[in-house]
Length: 278
Length: 211
Image 1 (spheres, rainbow over the protein chains, first blue to last red):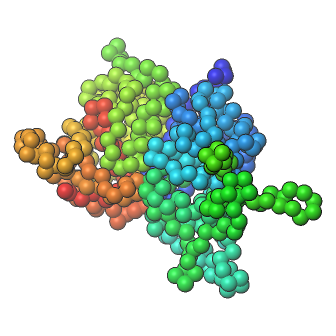
Image 2: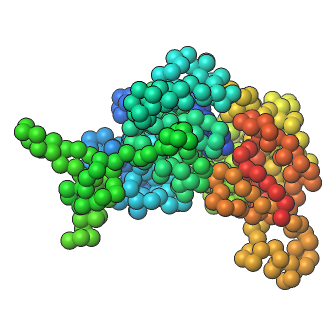
Image 3: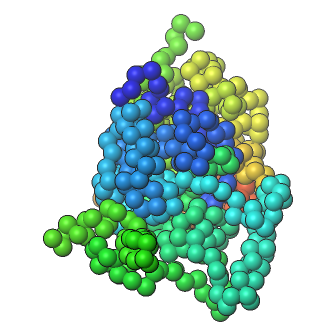
């Protein structure tokens, strides 16, 4: 473990402030709580919110997994894992089943999470209404009144123009039938996994300085209409590597003559399926 | 000040471990969680309540307490928190004796419900009904079952089906007070029940019935 830093990098006063925000976030599912986000040793947009949440909850006995769009082996995921190995001395893993804390950028692992795991999301824009109402004071009022007609109108306009809801990621959800929440830019395919998940879900937005949470077993419903129910979208292919027909797929261009393959976005899921098959 | 007791032995890791216990309790209302790394708490402060306050309270959070000067001096030294003159002005309310009414605490506002107070309520005991429920236990030890009362059945976010919790020593009208604050959601007070080294939490979303 690196000397000269406090355990898990943040000072204790900052951790206390973030911990208080996390507890209130759990008590008010889906409500965004402002917090004093600190400058972290990586730029905004690289997961500063998620890192601060992880740093405030992590202990020496935790095992940390970090994924970036499902992958354990991308720059962002590797740097964050290495950061916590250095400043907190914690064990890290690439296996979903072995992790006690999973920090994620824009995916939920394919393997179902358990009660003893915590999922920490990196959130670029916590306010689901920000494209519809630019005034923060006004969106706060709308959340206080549960006044979400604007979002329903936006989805309706999609249906009127396209015949379907055109949102494939960052698909707005209602938490415990009270708060409209941004699930962070996970694919709409992952939205159903949030519903009544046994694991605690925490969300941190560093640049926007907000923390929110979904407690375990809490109803999370994707916004839709009775005659246009929510549908999870998935590329209609099997994974080229493991053959999975149920996982979320990335499209990968293989050459400059139009060649492409579809592979699992969750690298640990794909790898473990291939190992099992071998 | 000579009889000032120490706080956490390891302020960083003890606070982290206590926080995870509180987070687990708040995420799964009614589940009893034990805190392992405890400070030496001055009477009448229970070790679990002392750990919660050292973990969460600081100069930004006024604390109201009915626990007397010795506890106030201990909190002031280890947590550095200002002492609120009324329960309404406090972010953390520590009740070791007769608890102030829930509606005498700050419930937050509709736009900022996060500023609601947290009540740290010391009770005699927290018990989880054993397998077979309170009926089975009653036949084993009638006296103990009488003491337990009918118990609570909790539902809401954080709970898969229902959690059962026996609280011995909560205010007699606590359930009525709890029901009265339900319609205020998202405003409302969150409660952390402490008994000895163990705690259970009641976030404002939880519904409590008897039985």
